[in-house]
Amino acid sequence: MLSPLDWALIEAWQERGIPLHIILRGIERVFDLIDKQPNRKRTVKSLLYCKEEVEAQYAEWLESQVGAVSSQQSAVSSQHPEKESLFSNDAIEEHLRQVSADLTAAKVQTGGDLSETLERVLNRLTELQTNYESAEKLEESLEKMDNLIDETLLKTADTEKFKAEVEKQIASYRGKMDAEVFQRTYDLMILKRLREERNIPRLSLFYL
Picture 1 (cartoon, rainbow, N blue to C red):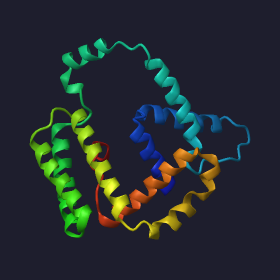
Picture 2 (cartoon, one colour; picture 1 turned 90 degrees about the vertical axis):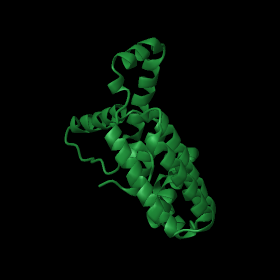
Picture 3 (cartoon, one colour; picture 1 turned 180 degrees about the vertical axis):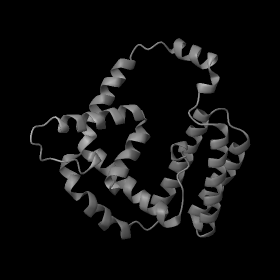
Picture 4 (cartoon, rainbow, N blue to C red; picture 1 turned 90 degrees about the horizontal axis):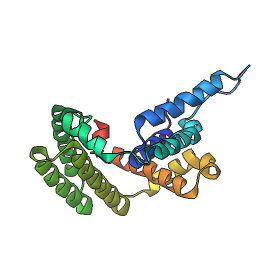
């Protein structure tokens, strides 16, 4: 079972744009190495155990992309426009309808700045439902709206009731993570709890 810290790490990878196949390859390599150990007694109990290998695989992949010919990518896109996006139009439209309905329900239970933010996001979602250039452009807009909601939550919501719980969950990792990564993980976990408390969905297409 994935822990809250594991989910926070997954969100951090997604926000950095690390391709899924790179993450899976890193995880598989960790398990392969463990399986090859004679009389192995160690088991993987957290996704964090795979973090270093995923980071290494991602670094290698980034280096391999240096010098890639962008014109080749353009050619593929023009010859196969249906492959431009991983998401079908029907799936996107349904996702936008669902998150709009969930946000509308959440807005009824809020007030003040958060209510105003959700109203702005809902108006923008209404525009996007009938007018978006591509899935990629749409994702950029959805990420900006997610960030806007997160910023408003952190400014207006009572985070004190979650701090002790989250700090306890990740205390043992403080010395094993860079300070910046630790703080980002902490913020992600707080935001996850705040959204759950108010039934505010993630808008990103990666939550389809």
